[in-house]
Image (cartoon, rainbow, N blue to C red; front, side, top):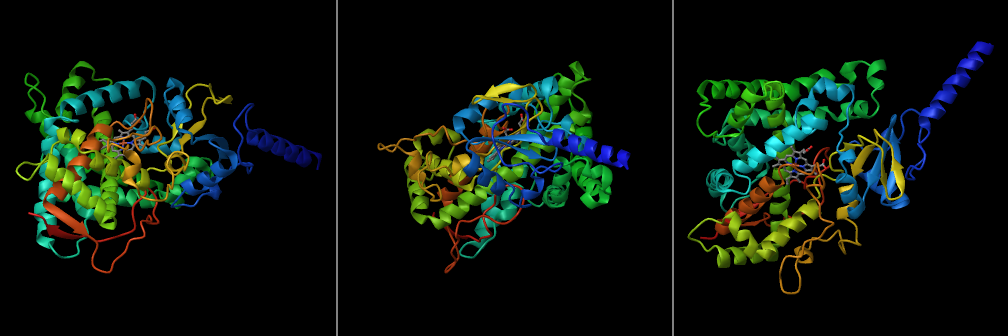
Amino acid sequence: MLTVVLIILLVVAWVLYKNKKPKNCPPGPVNIPLVGRAFAMNQNHPEKAFVEWQRQYGPLYSVKMGSDLMVVISDPALLREAFNKPASTGRMAGPVLEMLGVQRGLIFSVGEDWHVRRRFTLFHLRNFGMGKARLEDVIREQVDAFLEHVVAPSEGQPLTIDHSLDLAVVNIIWGIVAGETMSMKDTRVLDILEKNKSVADKAKRLNIAVMVPWLLKVLPRSLFRLDEVIELFNYPKTHLIAPVLEAHRRDFDPTSEPRDYIECFLLEQRSDPQRFTDEVLARSIGDMFSAGSDTTSTTLRWAFCLLCARPEAQRRIQAEIDQVVGASRPPSAADRQQMPFTEAFLMETQRFGDIVPMGVLHSAEQEFELGGYTIPRGTILVSLLRAIHRNPAHFPEPEQFKPERFLDREGRVRPSKALMPFSVGKRSCLGEAMARSELFLFLTCALQRYSFAFPAGFQHDLSSADRLGVTTPKPFEVVPTRRR
Ligand code: HEM
């Protein structure tokens, strides 16, 4: 009997010890032993619980998820300070992520591996076009295909653009990575898109296991659909990247200028084969697909939805296009400087759509100080972008879509330090320049030739769909009309 009591006391003491928050930790909600607050979250909209806590505990609070301590930041200056510290550049780790092999890519790698891969990728994406002519060509090819094959045949009729936007954006990434122009009907890309969609769906249950890893030890893997997710995760590598890599290796001439990201990688592989392995290449490309496709196409979806909901804003963008670009040549990234309203419209689209409401989780590689508190090593850091982008102190009437908020009295662009859809600091979005070019060129090329409206009688309440992942507008159709 005494032994049982002793064991119970020991277990209680252990649970209380694990449950305790460290010293000088930011305040936050009361913890539930062993699971923390993992079950307080809506599966499709985890950000809602975090925003609710932010209202109670302020712009810097802590909360336990399983055995992990999370620190949630929703003040722009504090977030900038935190994410500019080398100590904040870690990522979440754990058995599930290891099984998925994600540490060998760009998003989940850490330390020296991450540094080298990030520097290499940024440099070569820039060389192959980020903000330069090559990228513009690749983007324009895809916008032209979208306008010719999707929009033109449906003039005057309701049209769903979701899938075609997804395709165009994936094809742009592939054009930069593999130097290949994919047609909108290429089944390889369609396959990848389908698999990407089912990963998000199938991974819902796995998210709980990422937060509370010991559940995987006591419950069967099948309950979390772990093996299905691993297979889907590896799909682009085995079905798209591996065959193209082989073809590149066969045709590659190391003495001539590399033509795409894969050739740059093969060149680097010759001087540092230990670090630049085929696996790293496949995972890095996979990460560009997963970080760069849904995000960009969903932002475009918001842009088209908002253009139809605000015809006066659409007309103002078209007036800028007519004035700055005219009709005889396509818009180019260099026009952007002279098109302040278009720029403000895109900024407001990103603020309003707020498609990555909790950013991507970081983790503290070392203990550091923030806002007078101590953030221990291993803490998960959350950039609660939803609370920043919807804070009336930074954006009055935040629930309203108002591009003018980003213009000054003279009509010049007035940037805001609180607008951070690509996050901030050392790990901020690696594809920001590429995404910004895509958004600008897509919008201006489309509006140069067409106007878009909702079908007669249809109204969109500008709310988002109920699904996990990036925040997407509720479904809508557009009716295109040719301008000239
Ligand atoms: C509108 C489109 C996009 C949005 C809103 C977006 C947003 C973000 C955000 C919020 C992060 C997290 C940064 C952090 O950890 O603090 C991120 C990371 C990242 N993004 Fe994007 N992104 C977009 C497009 C792209 C594109 C086109 C690419 C590349 C082709 C890309 C590649 C990446 C990569 C590789 C990371 C991880 C960077 C690292 O861990 O060092 N993104 N993005």
